[in-house]
Image (cartoon, rainbow, N blue to C red; front, side):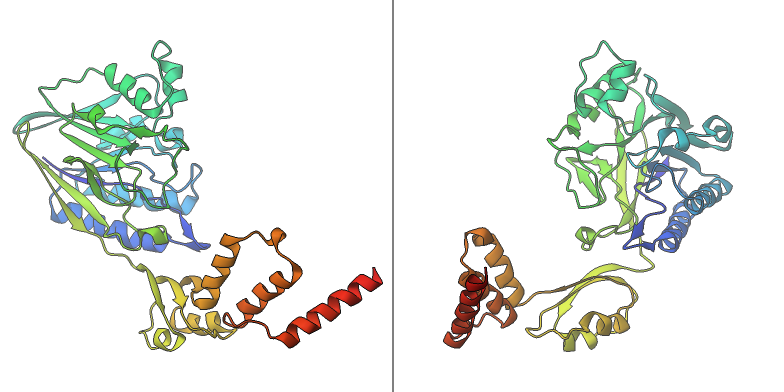
Length: 373
């Protein structure tokens, strides 16, 4: 059986108040084509379908169209809720759409949900584990000691009737210890959301969501699909992809990835104003950094002609570096007026020191102020 594993769609997300729905539609079209071209039997969506728990109508319509196209291609679809989703909203009409081959995790009520499929090698059990908070699990399993996400997931799996002789696939949206994160994910302070990979030893493949960089965790079959698009500049170096999982007889699982290409890439570019303006016109989402010592006041406007979708603009030169050094090494409140004036003068004059005449003028102004107070 062949599965296509994706996650973290974040439909409805904006970047600097720019809607990404057209970018998301573009990449979902690719995923449908991949599912068709690879002859996948099923598509697994490992949580964070939407950017927020109350998604806008346009995001819901896009997801409806996406899933409907997969169903028309005779693909099974498995969907779980992530930490950005509302479990109740995701599972709305779940019993009705099940007849169409769309299996959606329901809000957790004490048991791990599963769907059994069959192929030439026997049964494959697909387990649906939506994003869980310890408080939610503790409510339904009060006898278990549950204070962390690891204890919550361990308790849920312990109460599940998992036959290790069968082929088991888990779809899960949690943070596995050792995975590489970016600025886009929401983490719990103190590491209470960390889960050790050994918790999932009973499963032949674990389709993970939550982390936006595609990666395996300790073994090829414990894998984050990653988000289909770059959602922060910390992801600028990521290569986005969908995972293709071929499952034969028990113990025989092969995983490969298929690249995904954005409508607008998200990139960081830097250089002098002259070199930046010499670059080709681009509608990519950019963070542009200028390295000139003297930056024109209208630099951002000038660059936006060449880069209309510039998301972030910054300047890096000896002046801005000095600014960081000053703020980092000494508190302003511990400096004299002369020292503060000297710092300010350096910032405005590329690090040059104020002359004696400047100091005399400052001294005269300070004395006049003292006489009038």
